[in-house]
Length: 300
Image 1 (spheres, rainbow, N blue to C red):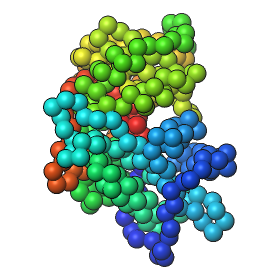
Image 2: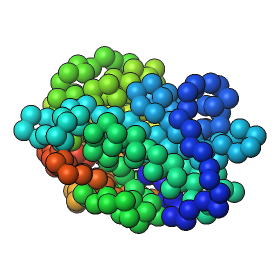
Image 3: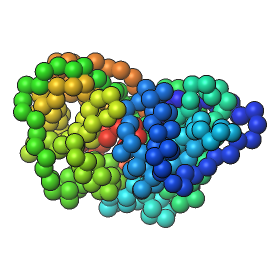
């Protein structure tokens, strides 16, 4: 997800799987996010810890110099076997390095440990790479599936009432989400929806989850049967928030791109969705045209 350095570290450095998510550990992980100008929150780190794994590199004083996260996803949809083990995919993200420690190969070191974790489970490794990280991941054998762009809208007055808390039917959302991705992630959707400040924007043929981030609310995932339905969901969501908004949209969405520009969004940075499938594995193929915004580079 984040850019990493291909050079090997000057000395052997230990990569540690975080055993406890203490307040001190959360604070140091939060510093890594802030130093990298990302949007993740403590709640996001809790998802990685509770459902996956967090890897870190420390300095001699115990401070975190680098991080990485692994998040296993659910099974592939019927007819889309992702691996000979049937264990599906896992997501790599949060490859972050402190500014003072960059150029030492720490990001590569943590990334390699995350990849080992996934391959030991017989899963397919997937991620969303920045341009800086894409070259490194390609060296490990990752291939680009498609590209996406982060869009941002600055604060402006809301034009519709704030959505009240709700309890949408998770099964129906997860079913459409799985159809889009080719693999399931109901536990992640539940974790996002159960946050007190999260809201679900529903339209007859699509939905989006909006959650708060460190610097902006994030719209995603946005799943809909076509661009017209996706635009309706986007307009509904954007109208209800006055603060900054972020959304990560596949590049092959020309009508949605026009709607984003009209709604005041501007493109910020690109990502590449990448996957590594080894012998006997094939990347699950969902209805990718249903994906109109991802849950974020950290969450697929």
